[in-house]
Image (cartoon, rainbow, N blue to C red; front, side, top):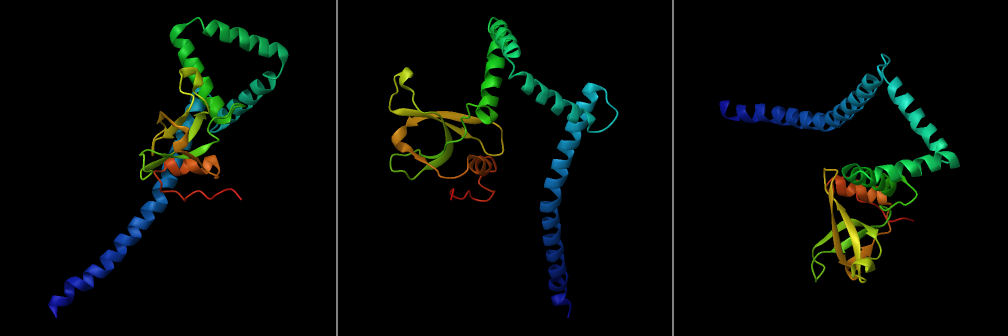
Length: 197
């Protein structure tokens, strides 16, 4: 009679553990996302000294949009060009400004660079492969006419590696680049990207 007691207790405990883990998977991403959004809103509100939660974000978005509208004006474009010439004279500031500008331009600007997802063979037999994005189609200026520059984002990180590989080892993927990036950054945990119809 007592020999079966541990099994009687173990079954409900296992079920409770399963429910707990499922709840953890559902709760933690919501809590982390909510916390990051809340901290961001409070930080922006704090910078602007606004007591209304979220007002700072709305003012910031409106300000950025206004700068975008002004950026199409010829007078404003001249001012930006003058400012960039001034920043080019400052060694560290020039590097920081140009790197940030190029990175943003690569993601959301007119010169998007992360729109060509590829699969790269890392070994001669093609057995080891990884996902990346072509950022330069030609490296002829470096004397590497047959090579391309491929950026490899790191999983669970906002960093990556740029590797130069022979173009023959690169296979273009017919999938949305945003889906491929999400797949890489998640470490392959998110849904596998589908080919474009």
